[in-house]
Image 1 (tube, rainbow, N blue to C red):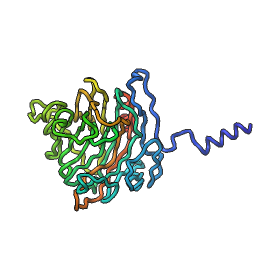
Image 2: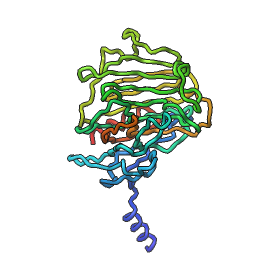
Image 3: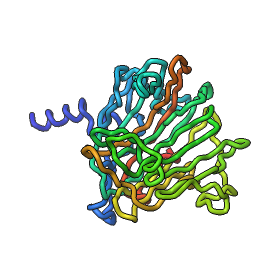
Image 4: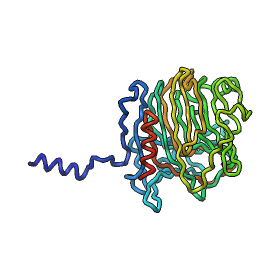
Length: 326
């Protein structure tokens, strides 16, 4: 009887639900266990306390500001979300001999090995109505294969430029991780696409695959400019869905969808690194912006919700549909 009472009290004070809303997602039987993602979770921030952030299964890229850039907030309809803020002087990294800096606030998975793994990612993002774009790089997502040392770009980054009127997607599939990218390595290893905001729609302006120059002829685009996708107005949510197969072989891929529109589609080698030691990969959401010497940029906040990472597209689509209904 005493044992039953003890179990009852434990369940009362330490509920079996996920205390900070992080939820493990089961890998379906049809998924090849050799290629399954090392992360399988869903985080909707609903069980977090307002004004605070409990990291639980995550970490932050902390360079001095700690948890100050990260706050849990609530919409009028009761939905909770993560607000990430970057301010002048927060989490500074020097670069370019100290004349140029970066400022950042990034929320991330713990590093895990992802070579020959298939990973499907989704998150919702919103720029608040009072958001101020800057005439510089503002990166809000990255998937990076990390080496020690590492002086190169992520495999996939999503970035604003030119006061939010330019959107660039892509990164480095390989090269010498211990050295900055040269023009020769950029030609061999870089993948990407650039979009321009024209009348409230994103139109593709160029695309690049490994070992190719930038394609600027509309007739050769994989992503036809005849099907532009809408620029999400300030204050409204959009959903990104990303698929990655991280491999040294030709069957790798990187796909990016925004609100069900395919906006980036690469097939081929996604991991071709030398130099340094591979320590693992991570997925980051947040803000990482360039900072020109002598210029003080305004505070910027971006909202994130329904951060999901799983092993297959079907499971991810089911979770995205579920979140839309709730």
